[in-house]
Image (tube, protein in one colour):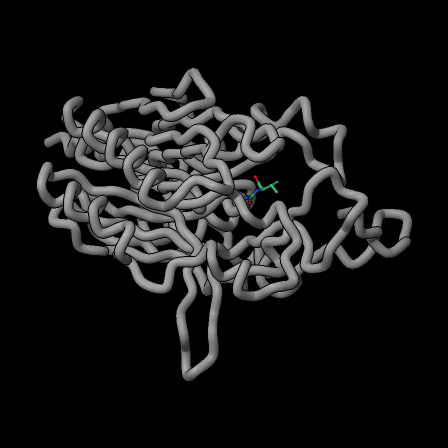
Length: 319
Ligand code: CDV
């Protein structure tokens, strides 16, 4: 018997630094209503979806940095989104900056939650792969200070929700094959990913023309190699002078893109996903139990990076 879950990729256009959370939540609610009117069970929003992408600026004042973080979820401005989800019966994935206190110490994460149709949080994820740099680098056209403002999360879990096994990742995580494989080993059937990706990569401008290609390449490969749906959702367009890619899409376990946004603004792309389509891949080509050879992969967890280049020189750092 087919297990259908109807998905909306809820892409956002730019969010200005001056835009209030309440205004952003209204935009999210408008997309949510459209998705539900189209019969969707779940809408996926981007990374850090409640504010502008603040790691592009260097702040010395902690209070200024913290103004972009959520201290509670739902909080006063986000409660309306949870209320609407429950009222109309739709779930959502939401990326946001999380400020929490553990043993009296403030901790900051680039986080996402999965909320079910009753408005309950059923999954929580903290971004593992934080790109960019920790110190001010004025040579860049814009900063990417995720390594300064966040600490990495602890791993990739999978939850039973929406009739299947759902996993989450955030932006740069999608470029790492380990992200998908760790969830693949837990039987994941749908990986939800929000992102903010500038077209221009200051340390490697030679990649700029390939940014949309790389976006789809990694998510399509992750889907196929793990027999899972992947949903990638952008915050796109010209945000505070920085052009960000769109390319939001829904990918089947075959690796094929089955729905995609066509603008760089607020837009939904829809797909009715049969989670049982994962089985054909999980039981044959990518039957891990039958075909994987973990002993041959030991180096993956034993070492972090390449220690030397092929010619014996240390690996140089660029960006
Ligand atoms: N928000 C991100 O993680 N962005 C990175 C950029 C910096 C390359 C990404 O992987 O898209």
